[in-house]
Length: 186
Image 1 (cartoon, rainbow, N blue to C red):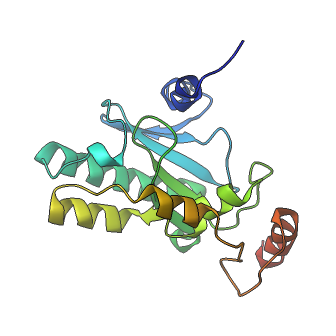
Image 2 (tube, one colour; image 1 turned 180 degrees about the horizontal axis):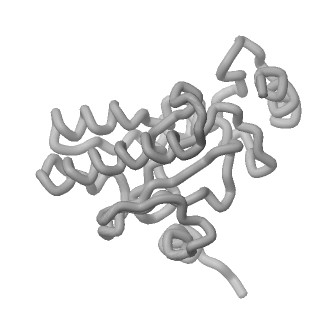
């Protein structure tokens, strides 16, 4: 059986219904565990409303309320972990590969067997990853967030590996992952 891009890009719609992955929810959105977490804690927050990507959000009252709710759920799921909020990144991929708007909440340990490639790393540790505050500011100011130039997105994902906590520049992912263990304090 051949899978096309459409089938896997819609996988979030099934995962958000699965009680094994649901963490918390509200009337308008749900927090799920990422099926392929790139860190010890990696959550996705999805609206129930069918909004394909961040580029479909506008400054309408409904969308502004939704963005506030997604941000509140991000804060709440961090509290559920019992960890300090400053070890989490909250944001969107600037060129999302999965259908359904989803906000990432990810711990900055990046200690996961699912973190395998340079693209995985750079999708969270370059300007490819847009902080939630930046996205909300752009939408409030401009009525939307503009799609990035695809060539720039490709360049960001191909960026040389670099530790996000120090100046270490590994040759490859296994070397980076080994180095990241030196930053884990507990």
